[in-house]
Length: 288
Image (cartoon, rainbow, N blue to C red; front, side, top):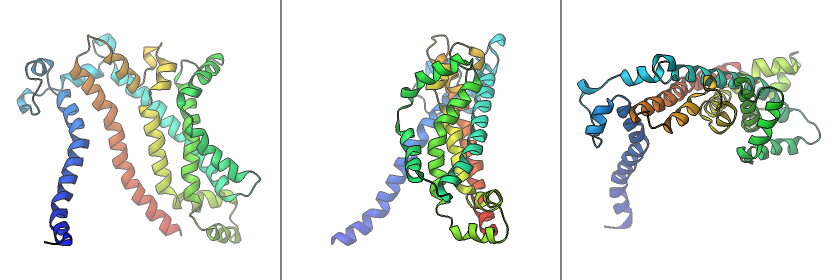
């Protein structure tokens, strides 16, 4: 058997081995986390090695305990999720309002230092977040925003604007300039061209950028720990989960339920954004 024939026989087998291996590596941790979140702590202590639990032994009481407020004997994750949602949604909307015209200006307008500014946006993002963490905390504390969700939103906007502009600018540059010129000949202003033509054409990338911003703001921990740790009422989900994991009175099943609550919104949003990407691409084609 020659080499080509050997590769043709082995490749179909190796392909499925690789696919199954990757699926197990990526899906198994999430499956185990979800499984433990529905297992009573007594069952987990008696059978910690089990990878499958009978249906009649599963319970949703763990989620009820996680979501209940601290005054009612729970962990207060419902409030943590509200705080995270306010921060993530606010950061996403405000960042897009800044980023879309900014990226359009860098991509379309001609001015001195344009290339340098485009590279600077990306270079700023390469600095470790810890480098600017302390200066931002001191600065925001002096203006009274050091322990507030508003201050955290402003920090996340500052963190996500550079890379978001870089992402959108790269896509805006792929849209032919002749489309803008044709719109100008038809009497459209720069703002009309941006909102009626460029934004619909770039909607897939805008949705991807929005998802990226939301995930950063939803999952981020360093600045949430620095800004909000002193006030439990303002904790986000990631901060609440980290703080509770250090306590010996919080069971592992409760932490697993909290981890699921931290993960599910991002997964659901990705599913919704995936459909929106297709819709945005179709809308752009119709406009063109």
